[in-house]
Image (cartoon, rainbow, N blue to C red):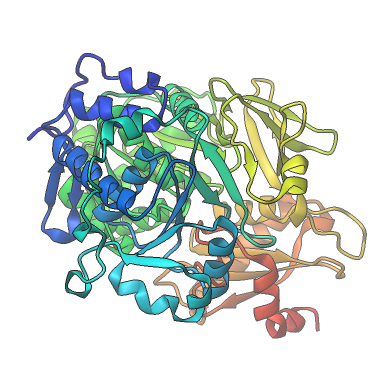
Length: 566
């Protein structure tokens, strides 16, 4: 069986397909013996592309028996696992749209998404059945996605209807058919279902491939939820266009172990993941290794500021290669970060290790609009526009995006769709930003998150939060508050193993705030702060994509906040 090797003839042919199911079939025919899916939780059980295609055809037949047709919707409530990838691919081969729910979603969110999407069928991982008890009234036909419950009610036990023509079914799917409903994180209200088409998804993936530098056959690790546009789009769907290999890690906490075994060529993750891997490596360094890595970081900083820097010698290159191997990144040709602003120290760390670390700007509503250029050090910006994307700023500084690959809009929300997707094609992102002389984007905050303290000066908390995390890497999360109040304050959570009660940790944070304040305008300085003992988790203080839920944070920690203003 093949794994990731040099690009074969026709490597990019699937990107020119009319639909994602067409792309899938092109890849399955082109590299039938290459490994498609590896189940890290099942001793590395692997499926080749030919076996993957056969499984998709079999499950598509089962779905057809259950009434799934072109234009329908199928919902999934499951953690990341091979059965989910197969069933989602089978769904789109029938012209239906997949709706994936986050496994950690609270009952209210599950009920909202199910009522809004109105799926014909809900496929559930057997271990998650109990999570549906409180929303039974919103659930219609339900089957087990995997082989749990001794196979009872399992999707795989259902045979295709007599005369089912799989090839005719997927060939009947049209480019403008809906391929998926991707629900937003819901930071400021109920999650909204973004309607993506086959045409839009393939166009966006082609732009992504060009902007980030397609590098032949790819082996990546899938460890996030397929409810997220990053995992579903640049992970799952993108693999259709490249015939790539994906190791599926069902439990994100096992990512480190999966990296050591899979040794991928590419990895996507939000900043929190890259910070966790950075901490793991730094905690293992000997004195000489620490010195060499710091020397490499200083070299990256010098190059980023246009200063001359001598290249590393052979002994240092060998040592850095050894460090990459230690954390399973020795075959890595591409490290990708999105979903939230990434601290500068993270960029510098991976660049110092010799890994091409690229950050990009993307959202469920428009895909990947801009990205840092391959092989360059665009520290401090998110790079320039991706192919087929335009960027400009509104009068108030809001970032506007235009692309022919944009989704259709929000499901069941015509007013919100008109507000976001303008008649002139420009998408209102809700982000505030700046463009430099080269057209590279720097984000400074969210429009709806702008604070107006009692002094009346508008404050963008996200830019202050990012600067503080840059100044103090021991800070895991920070939320700046002060709307309508006399001054700004901050709630902070520290990275493990730093404790909120440790004098050294408290002193480090206080020193970082003092340093940052000296560089900020007086009305934007943090005048008080509190270090919280408990971590912030997705589903509570954070969204499933690790964005701050500011309203929930201010409600939950009202007592601590009032103490800061006492």
